[in-house]
Amino acid sequence: MILELADIRIQPGKQAEFDVAIQRGIAEAISTAKGFAGFKIHKGIESPERYVLTILWETLENHTGDFRESAAFAEWRGIVGPFFAVPPTVEHFSLLAQSN
Image 1 (tube, rainbow, N blue to C red):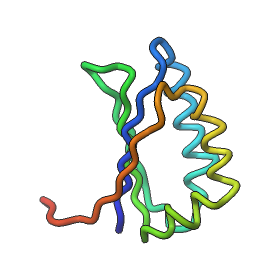
Image 2 (image 1 turned 120 degrees about the vertical axis):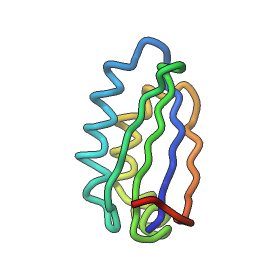
Image 3 (image 1 turned 180 degrees about the vertical axis):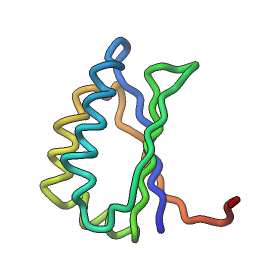
Image 4 (image 1 turned 45 degrees about the vertical axis):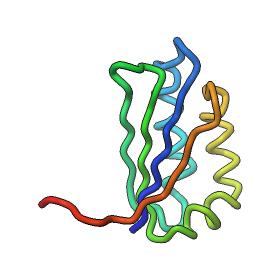
């Protein structure tokens, strides 16, 4: 499994609208992608315009190739992109260790 971590900063005052949009984007675009295995969305407390989205993919290529080169990626960006204050920072991680 590969963990995608997206650090998202949105425009001030748009949190309620973005809360709906990000969940819609995942349901309609990302969740149907090849290799998608789950997600979590965290909202900032000290920084209310900051969100951390984590998505599990079966392989790195499922995200960087299969999804990003699909029409679903354009759909995703069309839903959430208008809220971005700056482009998200996206990185990928492999699991080193975990607790039970």
